[in-house]
Image (cartoon, rainbow, N blue to C red):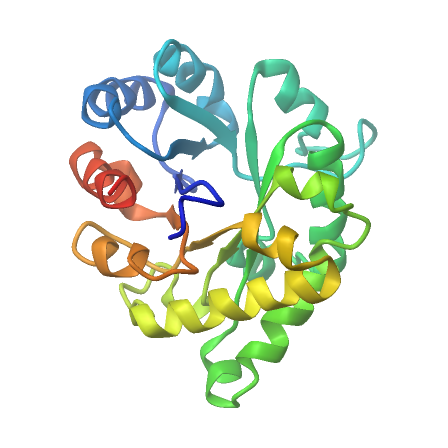
Length: 255
């Protein structure tokens, strides 16, 4: 990380886990453990948990995000939630393009871009996920693929709006598998993302952008991962459901 020019962000992605009551319990346990963090602390929770999360986190340094949003402001989109609905609740962040959305729910680079634009235009900070499958890594096209995903996801986003963008590198083969990219692999791809931003925008924009690693970062490997110059924190899955483990990752990013 280079805290002199950009902020470190540790964001939890709870996925489809926890009831509102459990949400309150976990956040109450986390608050004293992360209160002195020298990084941004975010929890992206299921829609039904947002109210409980906002209430439990009130007055603390924990900010609340959602796990997805639709690109339209309103309409006949049963089961979807708009970015404006999230901001009206007090949500600050939203994840777009997570690999599970791409893999299981038909998300494409184009819809990721549309959701990201909607989020930013509503005042949310979008955590935009990019990453390759194991097959794509073995084909040697990781760099090209991630650069393409990044360019498409940010189509229509101005340089000024980049302050509402975080990119999360999530190798699909490391999501929920327990496998983790080595610190050097994570650094290599995060550097590719930063180089892509420099080409599309400029070096100033690239240096200011927060880029997370999101493939099974946990309490055991966080120190090594966030020690890399282009890894500015993490998008945390399973470990964000355990207050103690999550706090260890936050402490690693606070050094």
